[in-house]
Amino acid sequence: MNVGIYIYDNAEVLDFSGPFEVFSTAARVNGTPDLFSAYLIGETGRSVTARAGFKVIPDYSIHKQPALDLLVVVGGVHSGEMEKKCCNGLAKTTM
Image (cartoon, rainbow, N blue to C red; front, side, top):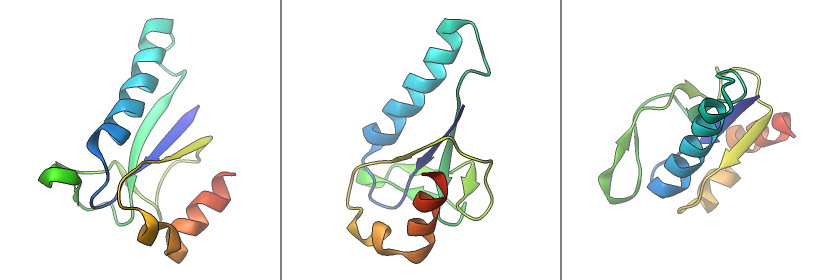
């Protein structure tokens, strides 16, 4: 199962690192490495500055990513993100 975790500037660090850890650990503990593949996705694929200046480089951009089975939109100051046409389209294609 491909799990995309959407990150953006001012996202809460625990809100994306926690789910990433849960999915990657579940696959490892289950003994099935391909059970979950978790990816960080950003709008452009460039570095994102989360809360408190924590810099993260996403694996993919929203325009170039593997097919997703699940999309996680993390917490933080995200109202502006959800109004962006490109982000809205990402959520619709995953549902």
